[in-house]
Amino acid sequence: MQPAIGLVETNSIAIGIKVGDAMVKRAPVNLLEARTVCPGKYIVLVGGDTGPVGEAMESGLETAADSIVDKLFLPNVHLSVFPAIAGAVEMEEVEALGIIETISVASTIVAADAAAKAAAVTLTEIRLANGLGGKSFVLLVGDVPNVEAAVEAGVNVIKDEGLLIRFVVIPQLHEDMRQKIV
Image (cartoon, rainbow, N blue to C red; front, side, top):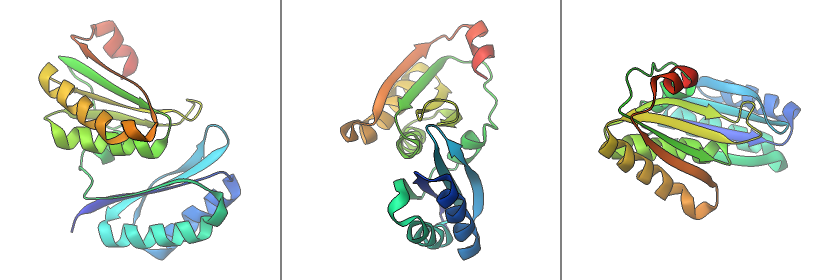
């Protein structure tokens, strides 16, 4: 069985809560996120095996109907995406830091997955529009060549959609900055 992530973003908080309830009632999935995001939208993010996540997505999309802002079904997701979304990854010593900043939750998850699959990096955080005016970003660390390759791969999968805001690679991140972003 392969892991998957499913996301439904709605323009209604009330419908978003109903969507989350429908998704977890429909299939045995893990509810990773169910909350408001700026500006006044609601996201439901589930993870689990591909089949159940697909079933939950069907139910969520049906329930959301015309309130859908964005959606994502990502089968075979890189396993490091889950702890990065949860913010459960420690950022130790950093040779290089890569940042991909996007305008949507879904595009950040897609970019993070592509980056993790492309090179030997550690996803340390995937911040999903919480207090960011709807923006999202992923932080990843590793040696300089791997961070550069990972950021390039992440950017390449989303740049044509017009959802990329900025990306950077910072070699030898100063310790004071590392302490502020963990």
